Image 1: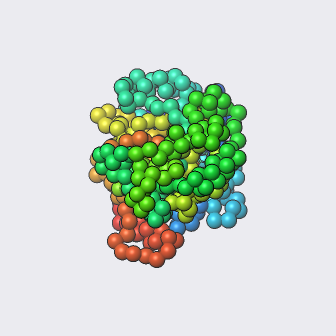
Image 2 (image 1 turned 90 degrees about the vertical axis):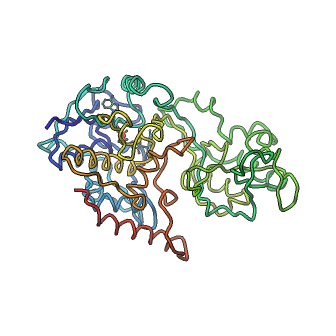
Length: 434
Ligand SMILES: Cc1cc2nc3c(=O)[nH]c(=O)nc-3n(C[C@H](O)[C@H](O)[C@H](O)COP(=O)(O)OP(=O)(O)OC[C@H]3O[C@@H](n4cnc5c(N)ncnc54)[C@H](O)[C@@H]3O)c2cc1C
């Protein structure tokens, strides 16, 4: 069988190579380290954790805990190595990063069906199946090549800031209402009102809140250009009221009055389970985001499914580009996996490498696709990333908002999430993903 080319030996690329090889499909895995390093990679080993050593929660009441358990039960290389090299971290799965990367590297290098080719890939191989898993810091030459292959609006985006996302369920609608400005079109926005006193307190805290550290590889000029909400706030007490918090054209139906300030939330997925805070791109530390944004009365108990982040990051406009197998629509020879597809995080990147490789191996072996259902975290992530109804696509952590709700009421969020996880794991057992 002709080998599959996998570009990038990060989390997604190593997982993909392992799953293919484990099914008898030969792989050539290309990695530019150590000859060439991205601004965030420093070690020669594969599957390098570029920042935190935590793969986040390992509890089934948490969506990333579910995703990990699904990967574990499906024979993931990354999860096996992480479990083998875990360090104490409460309910989280944290690892000894070097021991972890060494273990992945050893497994990859000793697999008889995986050949590693060192050096930067500047051109996509012109024959055979290709999985591009070159990460958020894909080298410039390869980025240019991807742009050439995917021209027009679908080519690589450059992203520097994102606003937080909250679940709709956690928004206190006693302090908010649905409307569009000047009642134009349908009532698409959730409008969160602030009184003059509430606004003044919010503004003071926003101006004083702690920002996240600037890493050496980040370009300072990017921050100046993209105007985080806290930077805008510091320009003056009323700047936000003429910007993202402007109340004009919005009347609170409970008072019949225009509030002093309004934060608008916009639907982030077709199901309306997740909303983003419009204009709230931010560089604040995550606990600060929670603290300060929760001062908005409707967001007092908001559940943040993603915090605002800012760093150099390239990813594809996947909803217009990829199908549920992370395969380029109209060019089935070419697949993408990992953070470059817009999944966010170590475990999510691993999951996309896993699913993409399992489905590819089955295709090459003339087996039907698995079609991981949306009830599983693996399936939900792939379906979100390839969902054409997602307009303003931004990188996404796995969360329960992208998994269909239960068909019955369960008291308490933890209990509900635990049931969602049990349903997913039960379904996983019925699938043939071999
Ligand atoms: C600064 C920064 C901090 C982050 N912090 C966290 C965090 O704390 N927690 C978290 O969950 N996620 C974090 N992320 C996101 C993180 O990048 C992903 O979660 C994960 O590493 C992505 O996995 P990947 O396999 O897609 O890409 P990567 O792990 O980046 O792997 C891509 C590989 O491709 C190689 N490569 C690139 N271009 C080429 C080329 N042309 N030819 C050959 N090889 C190439 C790279 O050298 C690299 O080894 C962070 C990202 C960045 C940029």
